[in-house]
Image (cartoon, rainbow, N blue to C red; front, side, top):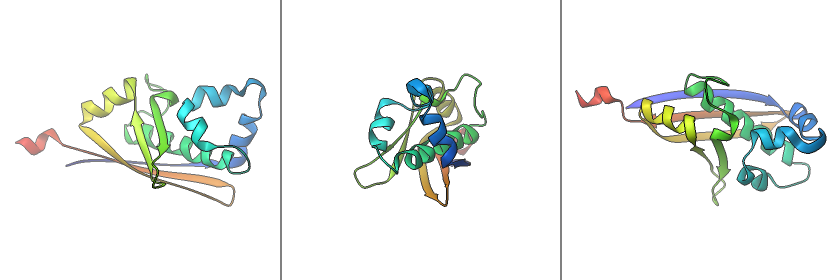
Length: 132
């Protein structure tokens, strides 16, 4: 069994400041249309987007890349199932890298409280050494 883990913490006020910039560059650069829609509007929007951003950073850490190395924020999508459970979907380079590591599914948890959002992700997969 292959197992990778990443965790990240984001200050909600920082996200809120970035969202208030003219033309929402941060929003379009970091969040897919599905993420933007599911975050809704109003008071909780910045907190929800902060949790998603933390989850994206946690995935990058779990993959061992951090930000960059060909992986961008739009290569990782964090959406919410009808049950309320968050889920991770990877695209482009992030998907290729996860596949090369044998990672086929993700467990993700996000929370926000006292001005911060936190996310923890666990990538699960099949370790090729298990075949030996």
